[in-house]
Amino acid sequence: MAFYHVSTREIQRVLTRVQMIEEQWQGRFRDFPQPPPGAPSLEELQASKERLLVSLVFINGIILVGAGGAAYFLAGKTLKPIKLMVDEQNQFISNSSHEVRTPLATLRAELEGGLLEKHISDKMARKILSSNLEEVDRLQGLSNKLLQLTKLHNFSSTKYTELISLKGVVETATKQVQTLANSKEIKIELTLKDSVVQGDKDSLRELFVILLDNAIKYSAEESKVKVTFHDTEDVVKVSIKDQGIGIPEEDLEHIFERFYRSDKSRSQTGGFGLGLSIAKQIVEKHNGTIKIVSEVGKGSTFIIFLPLVKS
Image (cartoon, rainbow, N blue to C red; front, side):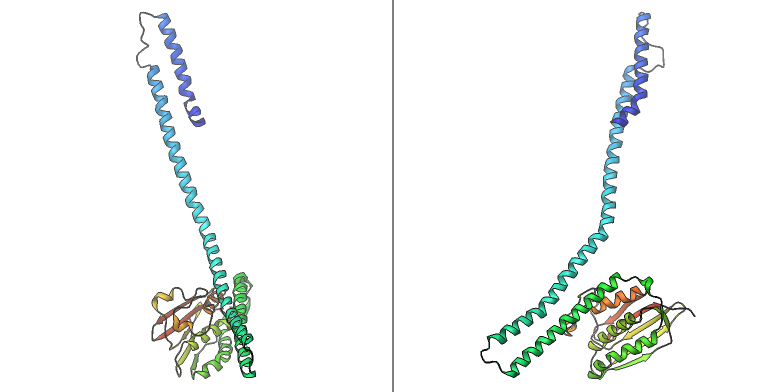
C-alpha cells in the first residue's frame, strides 16, 4: 500500500488542483458551469486512481506469488543435496547396525547353547570357540571396511603426490589373492604396461585386491581372470575380466552402493557388500572413473580409467 500511495501522490495532487480550479470556476462563472474543453474531470481522475490501485494490487499479487514460488524452488534445490546426504547417512547407519547384529546374534546363540550343555565335551567347546572366532573375524573385517570408507570420505585427492608404477601395484595385489585363486584353480593372466599414475600406493593396491578378490569369488573353478592395460594419451584403461556368474542388468546401477548385494548367489560369499563401494571411492579420489559390463552366465568386466602422468 505504501507503494500505491507513492504512485498515486502525483494523481492526488493534480486531482486536488483540478477540484480547486473547478470550485473557483463555478464561483466566478456561474452561467458557465463546465470547465474548459479537454480538462480532465474529477470523475475521470478518480477512476484513473482506482484503476491504478487495482493494477498495483494485481501486480503485487503476482510478485508475491512469484517470489514465494521462486523461494520455494531455490530452497528445495539448496536443501536437496543435504537431504540426500542425511538419507544416505541414515541408510548407512541402519545397514551397519544390521551387519553388526548378525554376527553378534550368532555369537550369543552359540555361547548360550554351550552354557546350557551340562556336560560339554572338549570337541564341542572347541567347535563353539572356532565358530565364535569366525564371527569375531567378520566383525573385525566389517569394522576395518567401515573405517576405510570413513578415511576415503575425508581424504582429499590433492594430497596424492606420489608417482606410482601401476604395473607393480597390480602385481603385488595379484600375489595377495593368489592363494584364493589357487584354491579354485583359477588362473590370473596379466597383460600389463609400465603405466605411471599419481596417487596413494596402498589405496591403489587395495583397489585391485578388491576387484581381483571379487572376480575370483564369483568365477567358476578352473576358469580365468584377465587383467589388461591399455594406454591412451591421457589415461590408462585397466580391464579386469572374469568368467563368473555375471550380474543381472537391473542390479548394475546399484552395484557400487554400500551394502548392496544383487542376489542370493552373490550373497553367499560372506561379504558385506562394501568392497565395490570402497573401490569406487578409491578410483574417484584418484580423479578416475570405474564402470562395469556384465552378462548373466558369461561373467563381468570392471573397467577403470586413471589419469596418466606424462613423461
